[in-house]
Image 1 (cartoon, rainbow, N blue to C red):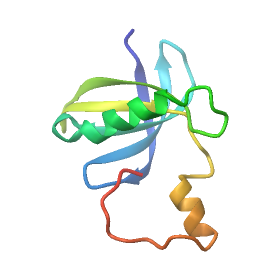
Image 2: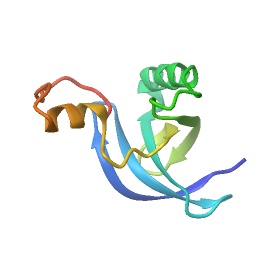
Image 3: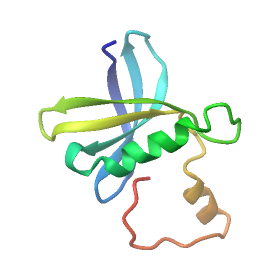
Image 4: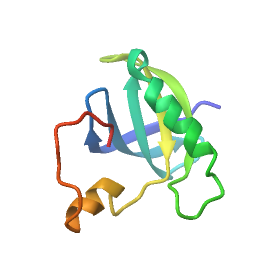
Length: 111
């Protein structure tokens, strides 16, 4: 199946990738997801994250992963993308920071 999306905005960035809020335009119109993307050369941790999240697909307390796919982007080349349930309140790390938890550091992590 060929999924087509429109990028709405950047939700976060890391050393090797970016997370966009996207809206599908085909085959289903107007479904909203968070889409994590990394250049193919740096996609191993993203693929591992997808593998781990698939183990918790039935858990109501874990963000659902809807699968991944490879695409070719004009400006970036080959990119691995992972569709995730959009958590409108932000990432767990952002919620921790907002509520006085872990402070921001310079570690590289995909949002």
